[in-house]
Image 1 (cartoon, rainbow, N blue to C red):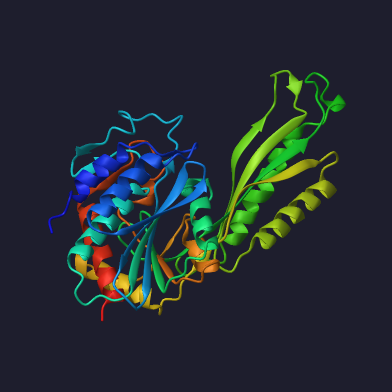
Image 2 (image 1 turned 180 degrees about the horizontal axis):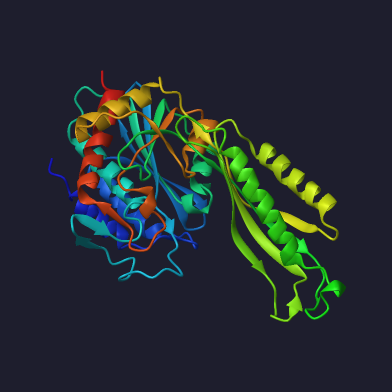
Length: 383
C-alpha cells in the first residue's frame, strides 16, 4: 500500500484549513482527517462536544490485546494581534522548515500520527490490541475536547500526547492556576490624592508580594520540571491621566508542579491578600475570578509506555535521552488523572515556537516523528 501523502504534504494541507480557538471551529480539519483515515481502512467515530465541534477518533483494531491511544488537538491558538510574514493559513517551506499556524502546536503531531497509522495499517503483522488516535477540539480552550473524551469513558493501557517536545519524551507537565483579581479603590482628582484611594498602588503592592512568592517556589524544584512559577501577566487600571484610579485589574499565572493543588494556590493567594489588608489601609480585592484551571500530572518512569517511547525515540533519532518535563499545560492531565492512563508527551517542534508569530517546525523532526510514533505502537502492541 502506497502512502496517500507525505507528512510534509499533509501538514501543508492541514495548516491551510483554519481552526483557531476562539472560536474553536474544527470541522474543516475533522472532515479532512476523517476522509484520510477512511482511505486506509481505519474505523472513524466522531463525538460532538459542542454543536459543530467534534472530536475525531480513528482506530486500528488488531484483535484482543492492549489499547494504545495517540492524543493531540485539531484547534490552534488564535493569532489575532500578531504580525506574521504572511497569512498564518498560507504555509510555506524555507530553510528546511514549514512555517504556518499550528506547524508545531500541534498539527505537526497530528499529521505525523496519521502518517504513522497509515504505515501501521499497511503492515499489521505481529500486532495485537488496538490503536486509537483521538484528535480533539478545544485544547486551546482548557482541554474541553479531551475532558469530554475521558468523561465518555475512554480507557487505555498507555497514551502518547502530541505536543512540541523536540522529539524528547516528557513524563510530567505543569498545571495552570490563573485568576483575575479586581482591586477597588476610590477615584479623585490627582491634585487631591488624599480624597481618593489609589487602586493601582494597591495592585502594585500585590504584584510585589506575588513576585516574592515566585522566589520562594524556586527553592523546591521538581526533578523533571524545575520549580513552580508565580507571575503577574496582565495589569490594567486607570481611566484618565489626571484622575486617581478607583479600580485596577490583574491576572496572575501560577504554574503548578505535580504534588501541588489548586487548594494550595488558593491558600497562598488568601494569605497575601490578608497580609496586605493588615498593612495597607483601604486595600480591597473586590473579586477573584477563575480564568484557567488545569492540574499537573506525571507518569512513573518505569511504566511500559515510557520505555517504549524512549526506545523508539532513541532508535529513530540516534540519540538516547532521559525522560524530561513539559513546562506547559496539556491534555495529559485528563488522561492521567481522570482516565488513569499512563501517558507520555512527545512531538516535533519546540514549545518556544508555539503561540508565536511565524510558527514553524523542522521537516527533519516532522519526518522522524512519523517513525517514532510508528515504533512506539509496534513496541507497545507487538506480540
